[in-house]
Length: 371
View 1 (cartoon, rainbow, N blue to C red):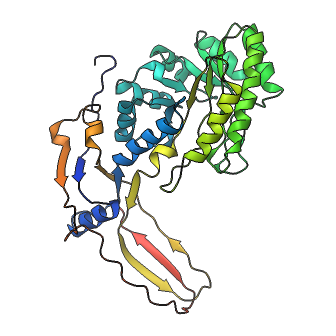
View 2 (cartoon, rainbow, N blue to C red; view 1 turned 90 degrees about the vertical axis):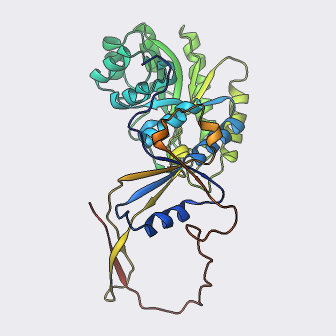
View 3 (cartoon, rainbow, N blue to C red; view 1 turned 60 degrees about the vertical axis):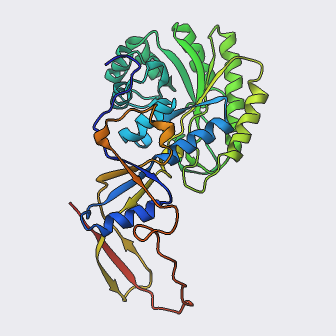
């Protein structure tokens, strides 16, 4: 493979749709064909492209490094690589996935503060030398297996509320522990180039980014006094990914904090969005083939079990991707959807809902098709 070139891995079917369509209408059309019983995803690559556009519009100074751990679907990874994102990898497997499609090592950060020694050796062998740490143990490990690494100290800065708080696992205390680790790294002749923090996945607080950036500024100044060349700020993830989310509010907080704390120096700023790119792009369809109502319970419960098995990809902004992301003709199916009402595949006209009438509380057990 020629370095820097993209190549297709495990080609999947890509369906380019023109005209009116929605994931729901496509799912209904697939089900009506009667040949698909296993659960499957409908992936809208147009949503991924639009979210990348919004990111570059709202936060032009912040480079997105997609968190591969969120969803390592090769179609999603290849699309983001074609758009120009970097990648946050947490393991050897993730680094291999990204480098196998031609992503250059400088577009990857090994953002796992607790790395296995063999993974450090592998990352170094393929040229991925930017990596995070948050403990003395990790510094000694890196000194042994990758002494020329470009290190980023990860500090703890938790949002007041988040879907997945990460501070209990990763990140050193920023006011006492982080300065001690920076001094130790300098004594060990290791190259610390920046600061990172992660407010928690699915953060529900915007102001936390300003706090993290302020803490990072203090550590940049300490690093300068220790002779370290601090030049990278990683503001982590936490960006909402549901279809109703809006990046504007949090971007205003981040932009203002960067202008206040880092306007006077050349600093590369990156972030690690995961669900921001992945969540809204996928719609899961699972066939319910049996149900039973039980009236003996006071509360309503729904039990669902299924496997995620098939992915259908839909891509309206084909003009944006076709030159960036080469695919063989065998993997592309082009369909034209009428712009007016559709006789098949379109969502039916909603039926007025009758006034609600009291019904007894009951439990519904739902079993989905398993393979």
